[in-house]
Image 1 (cartoon, one colour):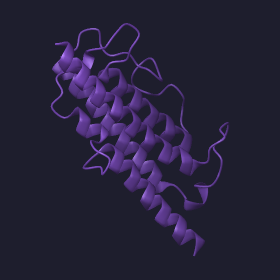
Image 2 (cartoon, one colour):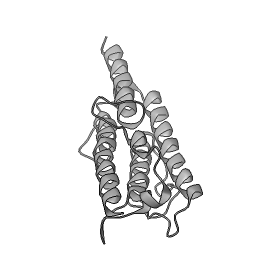
Image 3 (cartoon, helix red, strand yellow):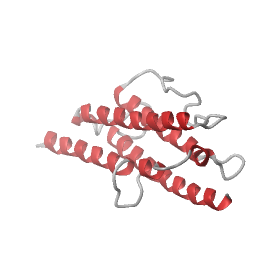
Length: 165
């Protein structure tokens, strides 16, 4: 019975991951939804010196999906495809091709994370992650909350950017 409950918890975690990332969220736009129709120049705009752009938030979210997946399944550190780890920089010259590639990277990292969660042994959900105060389940719902948090920032940056132009 306990294994069944944990298996249902994995299904719930997958649902939470998806509801913060794609489709419709009861809370408002999802991370991917907040990027729909965004032009590269708008994604690269920053509200001030030392502030992050939407583009950087996209790469940051992709990085943390990678980092959580790596903690769930193991893997080599430094394998994220963009330099800069936690905050990879946006390209110096934004282009539609680079923007599509980086949004595709975000989608790919989300799918890889989903695949890792689906393959996770239910008994590992409550095990603490090595070197962390959190268990595996907390990392999974934490990355979903991370998406929702940065979606709010993206929505704000879109409005601020529209007002600045």
